[in-house]
Amino acid sequence: MKQDILDFQGNKVTHSRKTCNGVRLHYYTAGQGPALILLHGVPKTSYYWRKLIPILTEKYTVVCPDLRGLGDSNRPKDGYDMMTMADDIVSLADQLGIDKFYLTGEDWGAACGYCIAKKYPDRVMKFAYIEMLLPGFGLEEWSHLTPENVEGNRWLWHINFYNVPAFPEALITGRERIYFDQFLKNEALDCNIPDDAMDEYIRCYSKPDSIRSMCEIYRATFQDAEWNLEAAKEKLKMPVLALGGREFIFEEVEREMKLVAEDVTSVVLDYGHQMAEECPELLASELDQFFGE
Image 1 (cartoon, rainbow, N blue to C red):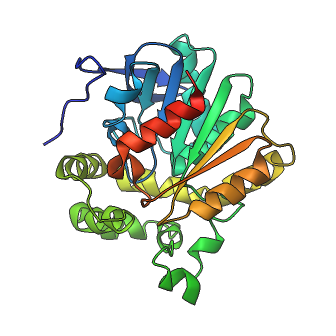
Image 2: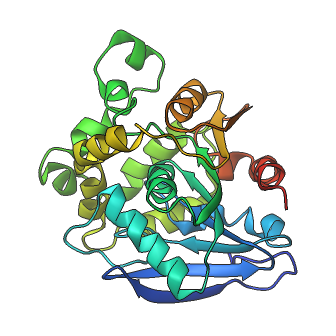
């Protein structure tokens, strides 16, 4: 059963919806202090951050949106490239009266975060990039069928699968629990994703058009890669935290951020890809230490 998300005082977070850049986004807010925006990855939702909220909200006003097409946000036909999704989030910040903010993204939320940091550098005070292979800098290579990728149990075969038109939707729809249970748990060190989280992710990805929306994010990979390669010709100036899990892609996180940012701090945690599920207290501590409020 889905758990209430509580702030540091035990109060429930405030859930709301706003139309941002042409799409209606669901988000929740809580806390006090400077703004901190948390962006989830795929196949997850803003519920992913629930264990960090009681820790971070004592020092930060935390904003957790569901990305376009995911969670309880609307599922438009298009706009799933990271540049458009970055504009979604900045539009949300504008409507909330937030000028400058700290930014954290994991997985595809990190790719979106990079676009935000690049397009709106005066808005992002510091940026934490967690467990993602940036299109144009490694994502494509990790999807290749090679002995190294397969044997390392980190082969990102789904990137190719999701790019096949219409087929993934047909195969996954109606079988979401079977598919995502294996998918998410395989990326965690001890394969332990709590039942409430699995239930919530499956609820959201079982909604009409959800699998298509998820796939459209991957189908924009080449567009994202082209934009990222051009954007990286001038590196990010704000401080960047490159945070990876030792049991997944930590070495790539550091390598990629040093290619696109000048001021990079690298941290490796002894966990897998789903760190907000696996080690929320440690992750929150690392974020707080980096943002330094």
